Image 1 (cartoon, helix red, strand yellow):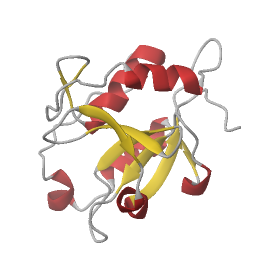
Image 2 (cartoon, one colour; image 1 turned 60 degrees about the vertical axis):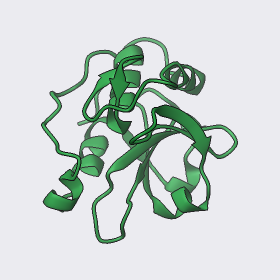
Image 3 (cartoon, helix red, strand yellow; image 1 turned 90 degrees about the vertical axis):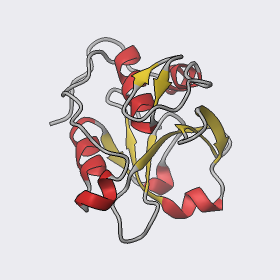
Image 4 (tube, rainbow, N blue to C red; image 1 turned 180 degrees about the vertical axis):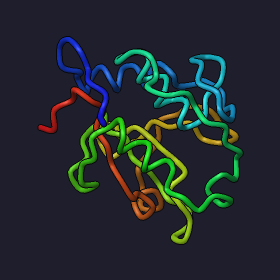
Length: 153
């Protein structure tokens, strides 16, 4: 069941502004604290908290190799519970993209799509950054989701 957003519609510009305010936050596995530490999921969680409210469920523990060990599409399944799935080819700035690093493994990386084929994401060993959604990333994009309350126009 998708979470219901109260009040005015959520704008794509607000999503991008909030995501960009995290740029430079150091990478830290399982963290979600702007300016202190975040992983890729932590960035999306932080944007959710800033624009929508409390997270809809507690974060389950996960190890850095969770996708390799579990072989379940946990990230995609959870995204589908709280976000609205959209076709990857129709994703718009402000939508959440999921990536699969290897064809035989579950998706384990997320980013927020920005304008001009760019993504905002927390990159292991770096920080939250904005970069180009180049061919390497595009080949690995497996799903796209919109935050609740965001129109798809």
